[in-house]
Image 1 (tube, rainbow, N blue to C red):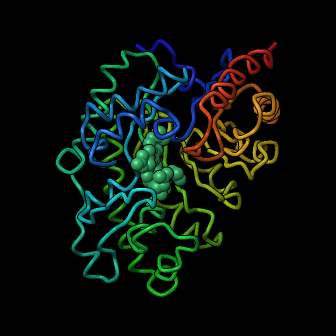
Image 2: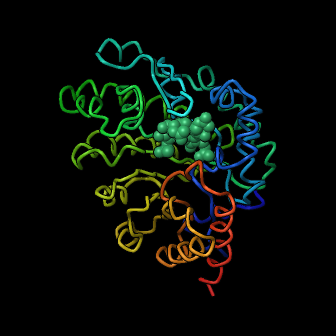
Length: 344
Ligand code: CP3
């Protein structure tokens, strides 16, 4: 079925002839063809909610960058919207929730979303993308981890501290669990529907993992991520929890295949703690601001640290919008060429 299944084989822990490579946020503003299409539309949500357009943007980096995977063009914030809390994407500022979750009544009013009814546009985008990809590369589906989704629902927008969301964990832990249970139930049904629609691998983004103390992380995040992993037995799952270096030993016990590392972590320290799991990452996105030769050297150094097998090459977080696509190409080409020589 798939002409290039390197990503899936590496995720399953099989030996591969070279290391697969893709980039978090590869679809988006780094590509002129994305900015051109986006400029003709009313906004981000029109792109996300129109399956044919979402599919087109999903495939752009496969054509333009020759990556080994596509990731469906959507956002983690479609989940709170499906539960009854709509988001806006404010130009040049980021997401905003006009209403936030403040009380038990607010949580009671939220629904466990039905994937086909409330997120059908994402599922349709997956189906359209799969048809158009015609097996060229695997398609990655995704969702936010419940803790990160709670953080946006309570805070209402991005924040350095997310102190409203963190306050809830201390002041009203039972309310937090009630909300996390609803988010988890929605996320499980949504991800199962993504797999049924054709997603070949699922990534869970816990972007705000690193702001919790280890005990809170275990109580309010890892356990819900575990439930999600358990509910997705049919395709490999990647857990990317930014800043959660303190949780590595717990992640080793999760029923997931791959653990994503941000650029603060050294894979040589993580590898001995995670058994036969695959690691993903972790070049500093800012390394792509260097000269092509610097990008090449940094990429080679990264590949050496991970070793040849059980590695999916990526950045340590999403690519920054002002990155030169030519340097992204140097990163991708270096992974492909140098990782093959690591096997020799
Ligand atoms: O290429 C891909 O990776 C697929 C698309 C994707 C988007 N968002 C599109 C997007 C993915 C996987 C996401 C996930 C996401 N969204 C996360 C988790 C990953 C991470 O970065 O930690 C988070 C926290 C969000 C929430 C979000 N969406 C923020 C904070 C912002 C504003 C910041 C920014 O990058 O602009 C967004 C907007 C967003 N999501 C854009 C894109 C392409 C930019 C909006 C635009 O093009 O107008």
